[in-house]
Structure formats: structure tokens, C-alpha cells
Length: 408
Image (tube, rainbow, N blue to C red; front, top):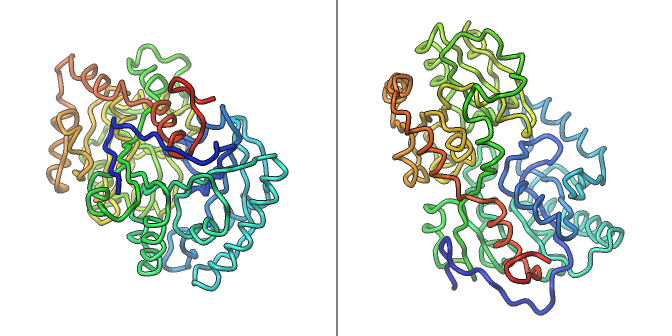
């Protein structure tokens, strides 16, 4: 097995050059956060060669009484499916596949036939020849095995068998098979990389990037043109969070405690509601804006006095590497976060906590921060974390022809 740490060469030799990429994505392009790593990487690759983004087929069925907001999940997936095949302004071709929303072995085998047939027709329509495949969700693994690819890359972004409400044993089997069968496996979590060392043919630790210019452009509040009107007259300090509000990642009780701690200041929350927020929204100093387009996030987040990451303590978080961390650091404000393993390389730039009490104490310390050099230190700590560099490395792994390190 070849193990490839950050910065080492990832050049591969393919029998033929990749003529396009089929991305079996882990999220749905039409309603998930475009800041995801595969969104960032694939949009960059789509500038150079055809990329077909196949929206996620999921891993579980929403269940009333168990899944948070099940009806909303059904409706948004149905809307996505009706979109069919569309060209996004980013250059990606986005397809919402027809599939059976069930995840037993028999149904997954049937979905593999359905997905493979749909992808084959679309590739012919788009004149994508000799494609390589990128896959994130293990439930698409059976479809991957039915296709013919120049190279296959498994994006091991998370331990999906730790996802709530999935059949963990079944998902783990699908993960293990992808790890052993894919030509390349890429990791963003060192802990997960080390735990699975020796299982893959070829494993690479890539980490995440950050769109530094996008997030650092409004790092000084007085430079923000046309401040968002939703933020007018919000009492300070503004302690902010943006991102997915999922029950398996967000410590809702901690967020409620933060809101009470900073009163009469404001807890500003931005992101799609994927859990019941009613208890949080009863706090009088919580301002919830819902989702904000990725293109607009820096204009809003630049108003934060502190950015928070109030994570739960669970297996999912232990193996995560949130892109939000580098985005927050690029914005320059103090960051208060629940401690998790991938934070180790950035602990000198954040306020980390192991308990609710420590988290609230860290809020107080961050609000009292007076060192004028710290915002620049935080920005500089992620200034060289380029998505373009990571996209070039992924292109090598997928067998895309390059010349002098640049995509053709």
C-alpha cells in the first residue's frame, strides 16, 4: 500500500487519460452548502473538463418521530429530483437521479442498475469518454462497481457508519469495500486516516482548503460595503454561527447557554434548519436568518465578534474536519470551539473547550481579547490553504492529464 501524507507527490499513471469526471456526490447540489470540499474541488475541475455531479442518493429514510423535520427532507429531495439534468453556472453538469429510497442490499443492487444506466446515457449525451469516478457516499458503491472508469477515488470525508439512524453495520461493509476496491482513497481526518492505515491500495491525507480571498475580503468590519440590513441594530457583542444545523453535530443545549451568557448581546445563527430549533429561538437575543448563499457568507460573518463551533461529543465529530474552521480563521475574529482531534494543528489560533463550562469561559476570554496582532495571526495561519492546489492533486489521482502542474 502507498500512503501519501500532505505535500508528498500524488502523481498516478493511468492507461488512458481521463476524459471527464462522474462525481457520485455526498450532498445534493441544489440544497446543501456549496462550501463542501467536493463542491470546491469539482467546480475547479469543471473549468477544465466535463464534470457530471450526481446528487446524493442518501443513506437513510427520514422517519417521523425519529428524524428531525422528515417532511421537509422529503419535499426538498422531490424538488431536486424534478430538476433532472441541468448545467450550473459553475460549469458543472448536475443530475438528480431517479432511485429507490431504501437501503437494503437488494434495493442497493437495483439502484446500482438504475444509476449506472442513467449515468451511461448522460455521459453519451455530454460526450464524456473515458471518465474517472469520484465517490463520497458508500451507498453509491454498487453503482460505481458496474461502471468502467479510468480511475476511481473514494472521498473518505467522514465515517458514514457513525451517521445517526443508518444501518451502521451495512454502511460499514459498504465503506470497507470501497476502501479496498478504489484506486485511491483520500482523507481529511488524520485520526480516520491512521485508523484505516494499511486497508487501501493507495491512501492520501489531503486536509481541506479555504477560499481565502473570499473569506478574508471583509475581515475589517469598516470595509464592508452595503452591510446586510438584517444585521442593523443588533445588540453587541454578536456571537455567530453559520452552517448546517443538524441534530447529530450541533449541541443545541450549549447554544442556548451561550445565548443566555452573552445577553443582552446577540447570538446570530445562519444556516439551513435540519433540526427543531424552537427551544433556541425562544431565547430573546437569538437572531436566526436561515440559509445565506455561499457568495454572501463573508459579508454576514464579518460582523461576528466571535465565531463559535458548538459541537456535540460523538463519533461523527471525533472523525470530522470542518471546513468552517479555516473559513472562520480567514475572517480573523476569535473562534470558540468544542475540542475535536483535527483541531490540534490550529489550537494556538482558537479557544478550545472540553465542557460547557469551559466553552462559556472561553466566550468571556475571547470577548476580552485585546491583542491587535491576533486577527492577522489567525488569517495568516490559513492563507496558504488553497482549494486550487487540492484540485490539482485530485486531478492527478483521477488520471486527468496535466502539463507543468497545470490541468489541461
